[in-house]
Length: 111
Image 1 (spheres, one colour):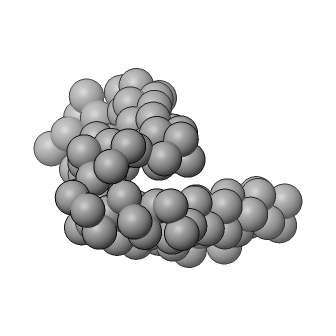
Image 2: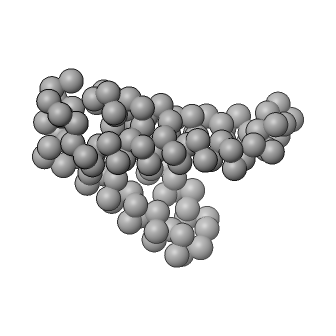
C-alpha cells in the first residue's frame, strides 16, 4: 500500500524536529556527562528521529512512539507560556489525527 501523504509529512516533521533539537541543544550536549539533563535532551530528540524514520517504513510501534513523544512534549509545555501550550496542544491534535486517519490506519495495518 502506498504511504499516505500525511504520514510522509509527519515523519519528516519529526525527523526535522529531532535533528534541529539536537543541533539547537549542541552546547548542552557537549557536556553530555557534566550537564545532568543532556542525556535526556539527546534521547528525547533521538526518539523523534527514530519515530519519524520508522513511520515512513510503516511500523505501527513508531506511530505509538510519536504519540507518546508529542503528549510528553505537551506535558513539558505546561511549564511554558499559555500560547506555547496551546500551540503544542493544537500540533498534538493534528499529529494524532493524522496518525490515526482512516488511510493511515490502513497503511499501518498492511505493514
